[in-house]
Image (tube, rainbow, N blue to C red; front, side, top):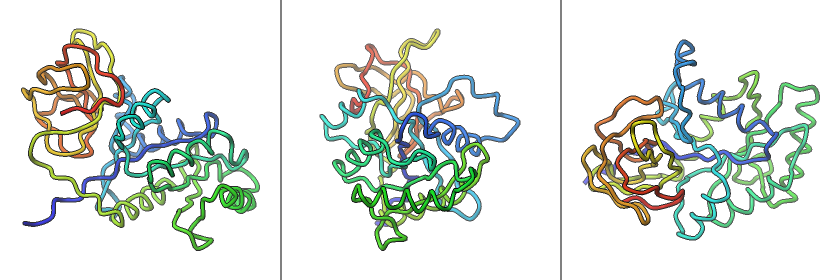
Length: 264
């Protein structure tokens, strides 16, 4: 039988609080919607997709770095909801403790890294890139420029510089990893977060990893169970089904699933 199609890679952005992770996510999210729709996303979801464009055959699904609770839960269950980690490092600050923690986590779960060197638009950008490369080397992160396997992409989240190069680099990594996931059969996925939705009851953000999740499916997540009443995409539009690497909000769980719970 033919190999299942390559789903977009699931990418988690990690990094120090002030290094521009949120602005980079906003910039990437902005590139995924038309400028006129920018105000249309009223409910920010913790995961969103950027479609394929500019000759790239693969888009990417981004997860906003969840709290420690989610990572702890995933470590515990050995579940890996992410294919690639983008390590966001501000060039004017370099490697910090949170950066080291993210590097440790990536090694622990054997997840490939791509470094996004942010704030390259500031004066002294090129010198700062060389300094950062050395700091990363000290942490045993060997960049491609030094014969290693980790790409470094200089970006500026605020000036929207280097975003296409970052997406290209992620698509290339995904192709090399050959991440294949069967798009049919019963759904398996991971709960990223759960909230109470007005008039909708419990809304769980779920990342489908294998199979297809459909409206009307009976599902179990951790200690909770239910029937999928509604499937909503990141912009709140209704879907009839969601396949691998698609982040969706699910309504219909009886109890609040925990972040990191496996959904079957």
